[in-house]
Length: 578
Image 1 (cartoon, one colour):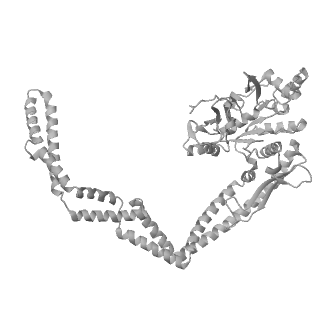
Image 2: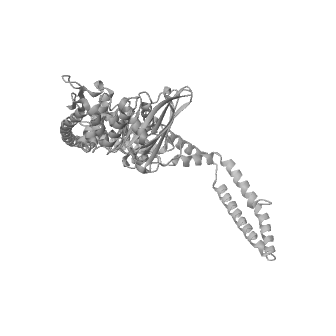
């Protein structure tokens, strides 16, 4: 649910902050006052495409912030957490747009791309009307709506798993069905690889060990000289360190009998003496074992070069060479046992194809039944919404599918068709529906599907286009009905719709210091009566139009014109901004 929208320097909006509540939120205002800019701002928060001309003239950037509550959508919480984004029931989206359409975006303070915003928040808000977020126009979305209405989603999910498994086995089958000549050539090549790597018998970590040996053997004389010099200086040479420390330790031990405070220092010096003696002995052992061995050096260098040749072919690391050996052995076994494996694959593919074909037929049957029922119910809703002369049809058409004869989404094409006028054949919804018609079709669909849809914010722009009287009242009734299960935001010119709002916001446009500025404010009480009266009778508000407005509000259950608290009465929490 959208809790709050803040917009700064976008088109004619200078600085606006609007709070939204559950139920039906209505936005009214004169034509051109800036209502659609509010929808544009929300679209930007959802990852919509930005244009540089959207930035208010004279400033360097526009900023949109939206606060959403998602505690009723655990699926969205899970999706956000999977992306490593904090999501504890509330999210804040911030979008900055600069000239040229470029900009940045954040979600709960973490930087995100425009594409990530669109993907993550796709199902949170649906915007219907003259807007790019017209999900209803996408064929895949139409199929999703139909499957959701007929409970076909589980069938489709099972079918998708079968289709993916079949394709994986079919790819393996294609590899195995190579010509005999090619198979033998591949077997020879794999055997060559296996022999080459197996004869070298590389071991993980061997390269590092050999490199260390090589460094010691190549610098044996220098290392021997350093070890012997260090040992002599510490122990066996004239004026060795142990001699001086031994004398100092003995002197401190004697002094310790006079002053016990020196005893700890004497003990530490004795410990240092023993440590130095141990180091000297180890240096002596090191020098004894270290020899200049040109033959061993040559062996090490030859082995290193052999390993590096393998890594150049099968690497880059020695662990990759070992992994290549295992893969080659597995592929060789598969090719040598081709007939047995092919028989296994053929059986598995046949079983999957039969199961998938049965599921696909079942899904087609479910879709056909659902399409017929959905067409009737939507047509009935459209009649009540002032489109009684229009016919609506959900077409489920079989389509040719490559083997196994079905795809992840079944074996059908789903398309919404409409004929706005009698005598005209139904045509694709996306091609002939106007913005107002499209919005009313979605309103009819959402009314029918309200119980099966996940809670979302539904935004209707131009739902009331071209209607009035009893049809306007029917549109208002259906919007209010939708608002029982969803948060609904409706831009409207009709008093019959505005009067049903649980929360009423008004957009006004003024001129300030020679600049056009749009303002957005929540209205209630007398201010709401005045706005409903203006919507009923035009600019000239009279006592008659005021009385009509009060009566309309009373009939719609809004006689006291009270507003619901934003966020359902829960306080808005603030997060750190990017």
